[in-house]
Length: 257
Image (tube, rainbow, N blue to C red):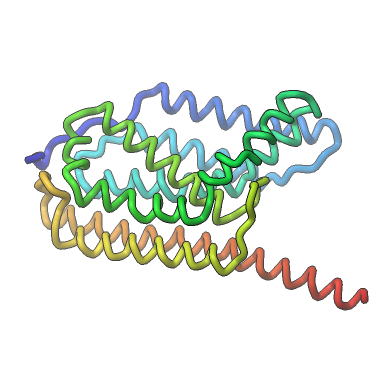
């Protein structure tokens, strides 16, 4: 059984350096648009930089306590993906690239059948709702505390799952298939319910093979419950804003007619 003091850093300075490089590349691309006379929202740039740097910074923290680990996963799997996707990184790349082979190749990848399946709403909802259950309700979490390579792999999975889910929900960048507001809202409700039930179960029972203090376990469960709710509410607000804009465009068309 994993003891109370089993801890290690989730990342290395290389992870923070990579985050700085990615953030700098985004800023450079946005500035390139401005130099040629195109517009790009400064709020998007700020959102991307904050999201990427938060991701790089949180990977440096030790996660011996369950509460610290849960804070990491909340940022890696929910908050950072939301901030990154709100910045529309694929749209920025497509606008910066000239109409050449690399741009056409990227569009083919984004619009491919494989990409369409990967970011389909049923797939991303299942991944988002089921991944944490598989992590915390099987011996997998205890194994990650003993094997750094598995720990890093799980963090990568959590990040990619969060990015795919947020990408499919927000639909801000080009996608092969677009879903309506109702199925996307239903996906948020389903994943939120799955996370809430898991958080409540963690309040009483730690992951198999671990031994955290009751106070640490309770704090981590509350963080997962309320922190997850906060990010899911932010996602719902994105959908609400899209609905408001769609209704406004429809009303404008009606008035013109």
